[in-house]
Image (cartoon, rainbow, N blue to C red; front, top):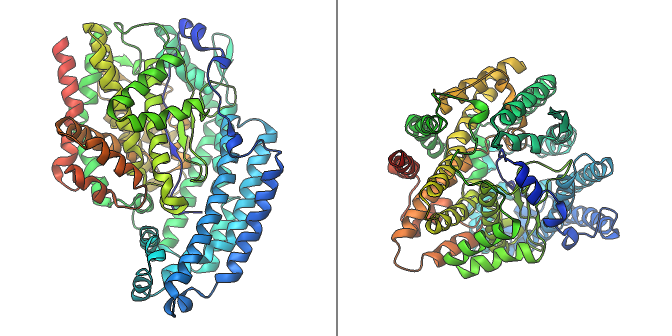
Length: 618
């Protein structure tokens, strides 16, 4: 219902799992599964039908009460209070719709191949789309109200409360279309991009990869890319390549269709650049993103190129094949990290920073807000979904007992804490632009990493921890900017006609070669590894938010280390603001300015400094 994406999806990672880890964590009943009953007791619950019917009535009544009246009534006596009541009703509808859509989406993420669940997800999505057609007029009419009139109305305290949301909506004004066209775009989304998104999800979940005589789903196959056995890593990479190759036409069609769909929408709305709609959605200036991208690409040689050269040396090679990019280091500790230990690691790190932050995070464990096991049909990767302010967030993981899983847990709980704190702003103003949505998650990772590093006395294990953190940061910064560069190339070239799978693969190899550097040898088959990245499908150009968040957190953590007192309070206040303030305003109390040319360089220097330390260790 709101203009921003409300889900904070974690980038797909490539987990590993040795036989020892399998023995330790393979039993799903040892890992928590979420309890979605706080939303609805099940897909057949009568409350689902009741709320869908309520939503239908509320949306139709809202249209009947307000359509065609906003400009005139707002300009009249008591207009501010009248409009505030309208916004309040709109927000209540948004909250109810958020509850329904979140429940359907989470159930589907838990098992996207079950036909009954898929039908439920599709039916709920269709009902929500049909109901929300009645609401389309509201923000369109709101944006047509004269600036002076809306400013006067917002002097009323009740409407002034919604000023951040109203001002955000009015930023969309130059790009909104005539009402009937907006309605057409909205209704056709179900048979357009939403249907192609669903096809991607179902196709990815149903793919099988033959490894050592077994047919594996994508998550356990990707996990083998971090197995200690080099032969297994190679076999997994070859299996991925073979299955991707067999399905390349489907994924090329999905990518081409969605890129064209976006181009049509952007052209009609008047966006100049392929990523401008994402920048508007993120409330970030194009020049700030361009500065970030330029800084990261210029730093490839001193970051990823240098690190992978080091890593190849640790394996006594000049080059590593692409399937060894995330291989566990020869001197890294073996053995699985039990779920209880992972929980304690993250909570103790959070508690050392702020007891309040740890208390919120602990509820995810005690109240069953986490779904951790790997299951057939379950969505790969990890995410924290905020659901709606009248409920609470839920975290999805695919926990397999590796150190990176602990960092992922810290990351997603950072999102979760942020979402809990921001919920008090209500359904319209709780969502945070993606650039800042990644701040809390990456900061949570950094807190956990620093605590683990401080507690590790063994030199080789400190080296392994430090190298693991560098790899994570390279995956978060370098890899995500390479993804963004790839997306720009695909969407730009798509304007001139369809791209074959081969051509998409060529673009992919070009940006991968540039970002990974000469120490990574890209072998045959890697040209199709773009196919499984969900962000390209679900959230075009989302990926730079990770790099934005990582570099920002590096600067933020530096401010934390120098702070005398009060940093945690200022930090939690920043998270609590949700979407009520621009990122520049939120960063001001910490003395940070993303428009300063030094800002991105300072953030990247933290990664470079860690690589310096690794080089000194030998």
